[in-house]
Length: 313
Ligand code: 8YV
Picture 1 (cartoon, rainbow, N blue to C red):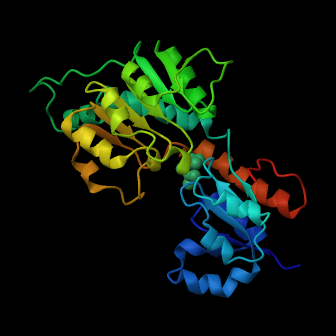
Picture 2: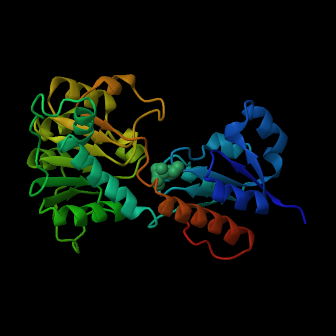
Picture 3: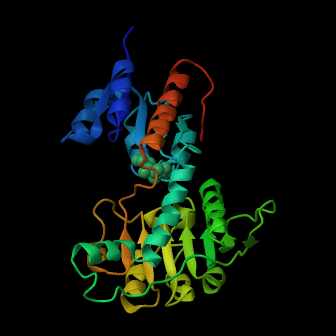
């Protein structure tokens, strides 16, 4: 029996590639210089897309795959997948929730600590031989401060739990109030930012949250405020963020996500008050193994006619 043909939009770690190559005929779109040519050659026989959170699958791509049955996403965020197009054609979509929650929450808190406590700057200070010659500038305490979290899903809750251990007071903004949670809910993000010392954003990406954090929210956060983004670059008005960082209307930012990754706005490189992280919140060996397993399990379940472990559509 011939193998099922799948189209991959980006690489997975080697341990996943070995398994995928053994079980499917894999077409590597990201490595192909002439993508249209590849799609014209194999599009008619491809039955699955294996993609990544940040790469997704557009309607334009899916339109070129008339036998497409499933899009398996290596990542929890499906904002870059055209879900309504997939629904319209009864194409299944799966993601990798839960397995990455703790690692992304760790990075949210780590970026807050790194940004407030100047950890990258301190590392440079020691390496460059400044220690003992000049005083390391004093920095901002995190413990016991007011933390606003925009987005109270699985990762938001995991960050709240961590911040509680730091003695932080927590309040949140979300689509819906979560009455079962012990944190204060604030439906107006600017009001929440005005109250907070720090704002961490972990809402899903997509149209509904585009530029949710705008100039008004940033100026409400204020000149001592620290902004952390572990969601998607699209959830913040990046131009407003760059302006706020440059003119001191916020103190600093810790960013795991950007517009146009990995070709981010070069103005970030020159800023001392930003900690940059290359969209790597889920990038531990442990979590990436679990994500790959789940992405592969979803494909296998679909082609063996079993219920999908983690369906989105
Ligand atoms: C991954 C992500 O970095 O889960 C998501 O939505 O953005 C990240 O965990 C990405 O999907 C892996 O390529």
